[in-house]
Length: 355
Ligand SMILES: NC(=O)c1ccc[n+]([C@@H]2O[C@H](COP(=O)([O-])OP(=O)(O)OC[C@H]3O[C@@H](n4cnc5c(N)ncnc54)[C@H](O)[C@@H]3O)[C@@H](O)[C@H]2O)c1
Ligand SMILES: [Zn+2]
Image (cartoon, rainbow, N blue to C red):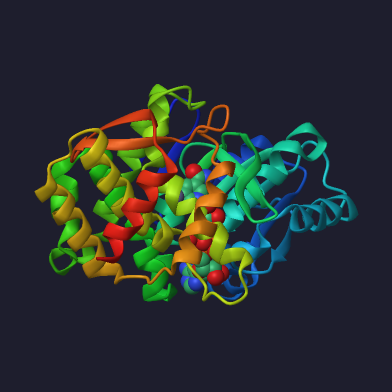
């Protein structure tokens, strides 16, 4: 059995994990289980999940709409109301079966329902397997601003079953891949070098790569669970990435932008800023830019787009007294956090991205 043990909960890998999950649920004698999913996963993932979970505890299924636009308080209220109607008590538990939207929202919903019930996470996207399901950050967006309402709340257990990825769209796979590239860039140069040439990545070995990313993320979280310091490095690419994501989310004229796609652009621009402030070598920046643009292409931003994206930076959770503070790279695999960056330099980063 492959397992990563964190300080708070275990993460199990593979189809054999359902037996362990089932035993755990039965031993805890929960009064009822609520399986939270979205409509796509209800159709594509729930049959596999239910066929493998050996439990005698009664369960109910609640589904939300798929995608980031459902990650808000209105959806939470709908789920909480359903939980009341289904008479879920303090001895019930919630299991999320879905991507990062379902696990972020579900974890938050569970953390405050009746002041907190147990939560289990079964990620079904690559992004959720390598990043969102690990570390206990839960929450939702408010008026387009990313993850501004939420709580640190650790699950009881995470079960990673890569067979869910068989139905995932290639674009969603690439979105998750961006967080894996991030893990390499902030923590493990050889991992980045392996991943950057996507042609060399053998997706039949995806489980090994997922495991590697989970180990990196758990190590960082373990050292700093509440993000007082080191954990901030997991936000590399996210200061600018979240601003881009929010701008696309609320702008009806823009096409859908996935979380990982926005983070990929954010990583290029934050690497540019790293050359100016931390002296990241030009050739390393060019290598990062070229390899990421090779995988994700280049998004076009007008001057107005950039101006409006810069406005969204004010919602970044790392800001202090209105000053933007970023995670920057000194080298591949080495970074620093809390570095003050001006909007002018960020605008220059967009210019260089578009070159
Ligand atoms: N909590 C954290 O630490 C953390 C870390 C990284 C990202 N996030 C958050 O995660 C979210 C993005 O997660 P995501 O990319 O998983 O998005 P998502 O949950 O919206 O899933 C993407 C799409 O894939 C579909 N889907 C899910 N599983 C599928 C499957 N097996 N087969 C076919 N389709 C499937 C979903 O219905 C959805 O349409 C963002 O909101 C981001 O902020 C959180
Ligand atoms: Zn992310």
